[in-house]
Amino acid sequence: MEINEIVEMDQKHFMNVYSGRYPLYVEKAEGIKIYSKDGKVYRDFLAGIGVNALGYSNQRFKDALKDQIDKIIHCSNLYYIEPQAELEKKLCQNSCFDRIFFANSGSEANEGALKLARKYFKKKGSNKFETITADNSFHGRTMTTVTATGQDKYKEPFTPLPEGFYTVPFNDLEALKEAVTDKTAAIMLEPIQGEGGIYPAEQKYLEGVRKLCDQKDILLIFDEVQCGMGRTGELFAYQNYGVEADIISLAKALGGGVPIGAFMAKEEVASAFEPGDHGTTFGGNPLATRAASEVIDIMLEAGFLEAVREKGSYLKSELDKLVAENDNLIETRGKGLMLAIELSDDLSAKEITDELFERGFLVNAVKEHTLRFLPPLVVEKEDMDLLVKNIREIITEN
Ligand SMILES: *Cc1c(COP(=O)(O)O)cnc(C)c1O
Image 1 (cartoon, rainbow, N blue to C red):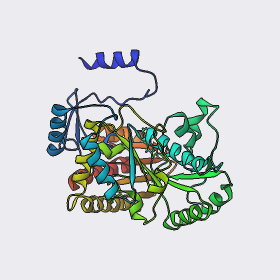
Image 2 (image 1 turned 90 degrees about the vertical axis):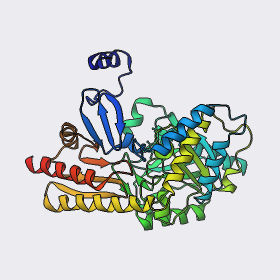
Image 3 (image 1 turned 90 degrees about the horizontal axis):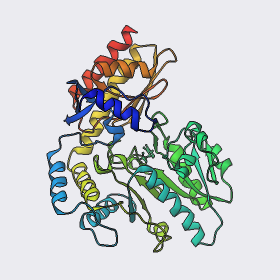
Image 4 (image 1 turned 30 degrees about the vertical axis):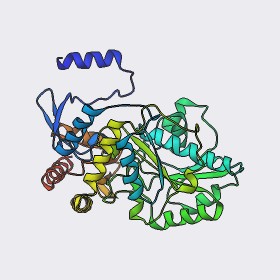
């Protein structure tokens, strides 16, 4: 198909929700580069929004998928599925959680986590059902997760919304304490807010939230859809804090590009679910779980997560230098390879993103004045140096 045909068909037939698509006509990818049908090449510092953690050329990952395709792609959860069982074991053994359920996306994982929290209290004969989340959070696009999301723009078009959701300022323990009622069932937080602009939780805050949950019999849910799976240099972001949740949700990088989500819980909480309470057609199918199983194996190989920490510190320190040099840059934020740079009101993140696109770099203007970087975890020093060099040039030219 010619490029203009692709654009024409898409504009005619696709629902108008991604109006500003960039003129990149994805053909193939190698390493951390995406090749466009028009011959241009882009270094990808967005990685399909934090999905393609292994980059695009991990042969072992591809071989595992090919092998699985030859065996079986999908079957029902009415039967035992070997790669699913293996993945269950790997995720539970490498986390503080005991049981897991597989879904197909981050929204669905959160939806399941919220259902589990409600069922937990219902089973105990309690009438708690409310959930408190943070301002600026993002939890998904289903009716419930859009309601849980602490950003009005995502929910206003869809009112009336499901009841029982409240938001409070992030990193403000007092506000959270005040918002808790005798109906509060769960507090759901991203240890590092992603779509909100890369805001890490403070250590004291998460510790305080855990304590509050223990005192008031509230379940703590960590949404690690974006910050989990090696992104911060630990397999899970909560491991940076040493603070455990009762339920955690995962997706994005979990399948290395094959759609899969999951939520895990401690035994006591997980046991609230009884046969028939939850289910899915696709979730955890052989192809998706084989993919995720391979992702975990690769991430847990000696040196992988350490390299993420090193690369993350390097990129952050290079961005910090930029900030120190330029009055129009406010600060850098984030952990591992989940980073952002905050621009002054005089600089538009969209304009810089567009300029970087012209120069062959994919980054994301996550907010009006915030540039976000979520490169594949296998990004090289050379790629990061080139990115920083180009940002420096763009900003000094401005
Ligand atoms: C992306 C994201 C979601 C939603 O995931 P989908 O797969 O798009 O449904 C939920 N929570 C967080 C923190 C996310 O970053």
